Length: 148
Image (cartoon, rainbow, N blue to C red; front, side, top):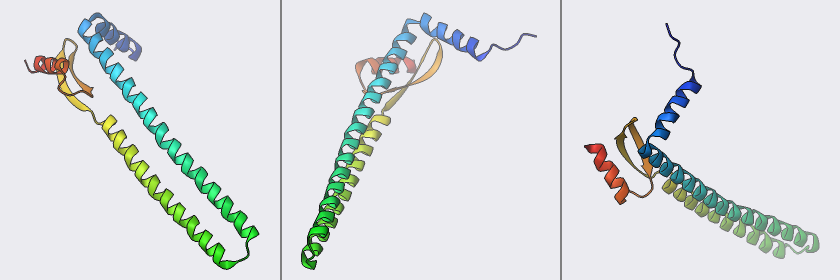
């Protein structure tokens, strides 16, 4: 009785089949490009989100430092109450900005993570491909071939 192929042998077998097939290579190449474009977009969006978040945290720290300095310099209660009110007003404004930035980041993330899909078959068997440009001429042709 022969032993089943090892995982490495199985991967090597499928890799050779894919690389020997021009259509497979082309489709995998396109999917790989799409994946890394989505990754690049995600990293850029995350960077933008975090830049804003850190700026708001620095603003919060500076506001608290200014309030602490004012407390040390000013003994008058009315001035301190006004400064305290302004400190919390700015904190609530930053909280609102955080919520808006988070909602925008999640919207971008969802737009990137939920692209349109289509199915097709080719010599290696049925496969599902994910694409960002639904109804492009190339995808329409591939989708039509899958339905044959």
